[in-house]
Image 1 (cartoon, rainbow, N blue to C red):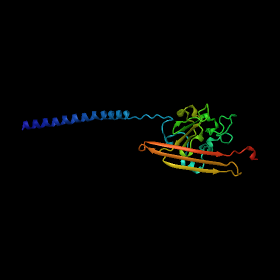
Image 2: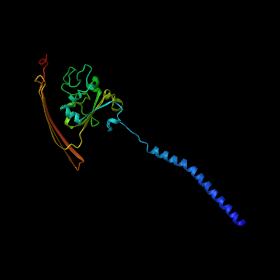
Image 3: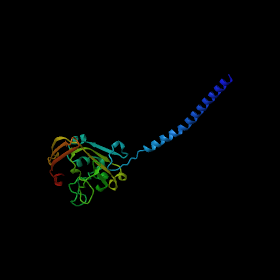
Length: 241
């Protein structure tokens, strides 16, 4: 009986030692696991870099943004995107007239060009992008883009950032940015015909546009062509009182 009691006492002591070791092991395992989780979180930390070539939606922009979609362009009936932009207050100069398509410099270098001029502070201070990238200038010696050279039928939407964006896009975006997004994977043939006249029976306009596109290489490539003709009758100052 004494041997049995001693054996039972040793067994009880062994169980206590095992439970004590398990508790110590559990106590040390908790902070180690937390450290591993913290290390994993640091490894998965995301670094976001923004710039003129980074695609972003209007919801991610912190500056005031106006969006003109293809439906609004079609409803306006305007074939020159520059004429449509002239209707927005941010693209009007200080005297209430359109700052685009003028010859205010006293030379003919910019006559007939549709140059974006946000807030009337100069065309060189407004950056025009096509699909988020800089476009070929339309005025010699400047970075100003001729908006009339961008086919309206190929435009998916126009994003106008009316706040200063020079911190992201550079010094030529002091007054804002106009980003023209073109349609992708255009297929088929589209013909646009329009004509107009003023209420004084002058200033006749005719516009004809032909757009054709097709995909190839199992949808990995696309070829799009656009041909347009536009004619607008001049209206001399002497035709109005």
